[in-house]
Image (cartoon, rainbow, N blue to C red; front, side, top):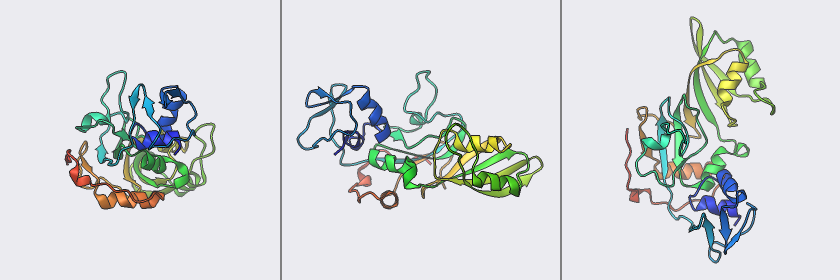
Length: 253
């Protein structure tokens, strides 16, 4: 098994974050610092340590669905002491957000300690769909929709695009539904701004097949086993044995 994948399997971090931990020299295998994330390890016979603490692969994972409110950071911790999504969930040890919603974006956010699933849910090659609803300034017309669907430049990378539907127009603002597969930083806000329609309010209403129906802002719940199985199937992972009924934390609706 690759070392970065093993760290993710241990619930230490997402696979991407695990790469950072390894390359920074914080990981030892059998007493030797290893800085190549692709190095192979044998989970049964190799001793893997992070900052001097031995890691062991988890056999049971947790999956928490949160209805993120505005004004809360999507981060495990903040050096400036600002409120993060982790402050909304009890017994959060080991959990981390899957992907990122910026501070003022609301809606569906998954937190887990399952690094393999988190990696696949956020990597563009697995084409996991994310759906947003955005109130924007100005009256959006069909020409602008076409431009957004063809692709707009938001940085030095390739153009970004999404499937756009006009839901409502009111005076000088419009309500749009945007579906994307990528997850570049602040992508939806930046593409709408590039199209001349800055965001007034933004909410993610669906991530993969997950919605926050029935959850108040700041409320959360554990995923049901059938929901976890569906995410595994969607991302091509082998079925996971995971008895969620033994979890000690309960949802807050």
